[in-house]
Length: 279
Image 1 (cartoon, rainbow, N blue to C red):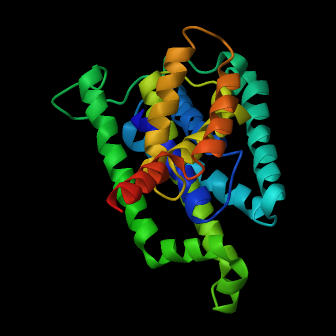
Image 2: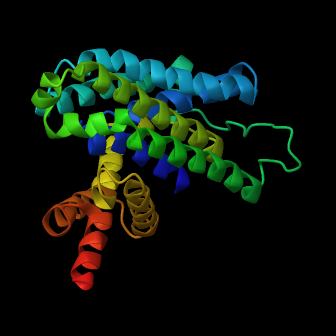
C-alpha cells in the first residue's frame, strides 16, 4: 500500500496541483520497474546501479513524453498521455526477447545492502519501503509548499493570468511532469523489488486509471489524500478479487459514487464534516 501511495501522490502533483489529468502515468512506473528488473536479472543485482537507473529512465521517459503531451490541453492532453503510455505497453508486450512479453520478468531479486538484516525478510523490507515513503512524502510536501508548488496551483486555476504575471507556464508544467514521472519511477522500482515480478499489465490503461481513481478518491491536491485513496483501492481490490474477476467494473462503480457523493475526495469530505461540526 505504501508503494502505491507513492505512485498516487506522484500523480497528484500533476492532477491536484498542476491540473493535468494523465491516463499514461503507469508508463513511468512500468519503465522503472522493467529497468531495475532487467539490470538485476541480466547485468548485476547492484542496488547502487539498478535503483538510480530505474529513476533516471522514468524521469527521462517523462521528459520525452512531456515534450509531446504538453503541446495539448484538456481532453487532448488526456488522450495523448494515454496514447504514449500504450506505446510503451505495446513495446513491453511485443518485445518478448527483452521483456518476456506477456509472461513478464519473474524472479527479480531484492537488493543486497550492507545492513544488519536481509531485505528478503518481510519486516526489514517493510521498513525499507517505509523509509522511501516518508522521503517521498517529505519531498513532495516541500515541492507543494514552495513557490514552485504555489505557481502550479495558480496555473491550475488560470493559465492566462499566470502568463500575464510573467510566469513561463509551459516550463512550470514541464518540470512538474518530469517530477511526477520521477516519483512514479520510485514507486515502480520499489514495487519490482517487493513483487519480484513485472509484466506489461503495469504499463496499461487500467493501471493508470486506478492511479487516477486513487487521487480522486483520496482528494486531489492534498498529497496524503491520494495515499489514503491508494490504501482503500488496494484493500478493496485484494478483498473483492477473491470473490469476482471483474475488478475493473468495481473501479467504475467507485468512480461514479465518488463523483456523485464526494467530489472533493475523502479528505475533502472529512474537512467538510469537521467544519460543519465546528459551526
